[in-house]
Amino acid sequence: MGNRKPSLSFWQIWNMCFGFLGIQFGFALQNANVSRIFQTLGADMEQVPGLWIAAPLTGLLVQPVIGYFSDRTWTRLGRRRPYFLWGALFSTAALVVMPTSPELWIAAGTLWVLDASLNVSMEPFRAFVGDQLAPRQRPTGYAMQSFFIGVGSVVASALPFVLAKVGVANTAGPGEVPDTVRYAFWFGGAVLLLAVLWTVVRTREYPPEVLRTFDDATPEGALPAADAPVPPAGGGLAWLLVGVAGLVAVAALDLDRMLYVLAGLPLGYGLLRLVARRLAPQRMLATIAADLHAMPTTMRQLAVVQFFSWFGLFAMWIYTTAAVAQTHYGSSDPQSAAYNDGANWVGVLFAAYNGFAALAAIVIPWLARRLGLRGAHLVNLMLGALGLLSIAFVDDPRWLLGSMVGVGFAWASILSLPYALLSDSLPAEKMGVYMGIFNFFIVIPQLVAVSTLGFLLGRVFDGEPMRVLMLGGASLAIAGLCVLRVSRPRSA
Image (cartoon, rainbow, N blue to C red; front, side, top):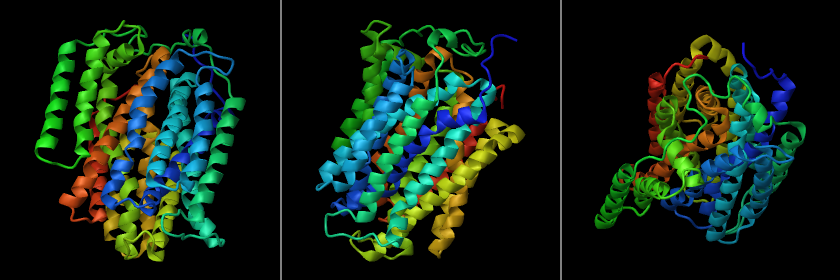
């Protein structure tokens, strides 16, 4: 039978996932209100995706680094919990500062701090489930995280709407963020810090030497814990040349400057490969480059699913406020009462899809047992595609709540089932770094989104943000079809 990890009780899993409620409180406030803050401070609609670049870029840079170091950390607080705590402290400070920003550049800079800090806390939480739970309980652990994400997001997304209903001012002078948004961010900072502290205080971690003794430390078919060889420089040079060619093309054709970000992706990967060849194999960059090059087949297959899933989500987060305000409330002016009413209703819609996600998180473990992990994820992504596409065909904004049912199921599934599919193929000693590398396939589609959506909106979609939402729905449908390519795991 081997040395199996002991099963944890419901309340033990609850405690280890509770901090995710606070982290998602911060993300939900950001997703529902940052575009509004940017437009209030003077950003044009086509500028907004570029200002959002902090979200994916900090994830790309921070998560693998935090994963690498947390795999090698052991303190009185444990392995992952020190990162939970420090990330929460800086996230709380950023939430306090952002809605009081007097200038657009200050708000944009604060978003960088907020996103980097949230990523410091979030990345170890994914590895934490893999560390603490046996493979048979991991779907439940990730579903529990999805539940807390949904609950936290419901309250956070709806806060400005609720505050407006109780009499807090929902409009402000030019260049000023309404009180509804400011108070919501301040309350969110307190919730984030307290929720993460709960997990830090109420959980324990296995020391590294104990983790190595469990029979899931190196799963069948997984890579060994030993360092993979650093990939050859030739491939790095090829990626570098592709990136340089892209930069030259954007400059020569006078294309949207955000397309430089898109060209920078292969350029950055090529540089990583070339630099890694000059470093000792045990150095951080060399290890990350080697593990990225040698990642398991399941991770490669899931990368495609993640790309289309998160491209669709990012299109929704950036443009739902503008699309609903323009199409359903008849205003594109962020100073108007109609626009702010529409923006508040989007907060309610975002709260609704997160509420449905919390309910879906209860259903998903049952659905996974009936259909398998792959089948359940396919169904949920298709529901999300239908929900997002339906926004364009609903006349009464109140009925958009129905659209959010499908989005909620997709959101809960995206936050849980890919990690359950992945974790069975990862060695325990590299759980953190591989969860961080897996985040590449969340942030790369976001970088593609911020570098292309503004261009598409202005050049292809005639300035109609609703068409961007339809593109997002199509992307979720493609992600669902790509699930069929993922290898069937033992637990699926």
